[in-house]
Image (cartoon, rainbow, N blue to C red; front, side, top):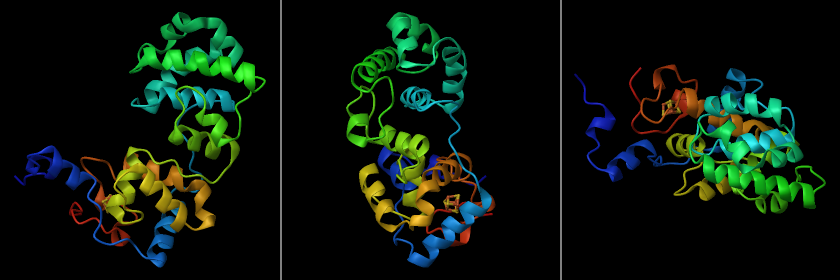
Length: 237
Ligand code: SF4
């Protein structure tokens, strides 16, 4: 039986080298364009899998999604938003009331505290609206650069590319935008991705990483960009 890459990795360092293995080369402009054309053909209307109806609900869902699956977040917000879907309503629930809805999600104590404080700031400083501004978003508790990028992109149509673990992995493996940390990858994607692909790049890469270029068993045999990808450890078809 062949030894899988994960079994062959004896140390965390080797594991990281394998799973996030930066390609030796950065793909060229033509290949990069072809990669996005194929991802677009495969996913013509990509979007988030988080369920929401307003920018505020998306903000709450994204805060909850840190180190949690979209499925688990949707399960919790389905009931939460039915009861309390606005900053005022969630603030009225209070921290303990909110916890009752999100206790199945990891780090729910911290997330509940941040969401309540965020609701208070939205009510006091932004008339209860989510600001379409990076600085104002990042000033909200529980909102970092990645969350701000998701909100700007998905709620307000700004062509930002939020880099999460999936996008970090895919960008490194394929050679699209190799980088040692998420900020390096984000900056590189920002520089090299053609404008026509920027709005949807975040969702194409995240969905590709979630369902095809998975961390442990990338589906290289079924991958639409296999011949364009520079990953040195592709799984044989
Ligand atoms: S060929 Fe394999 S490593 Fe490359 S993008 Fe596709 S699934 Fe990922």
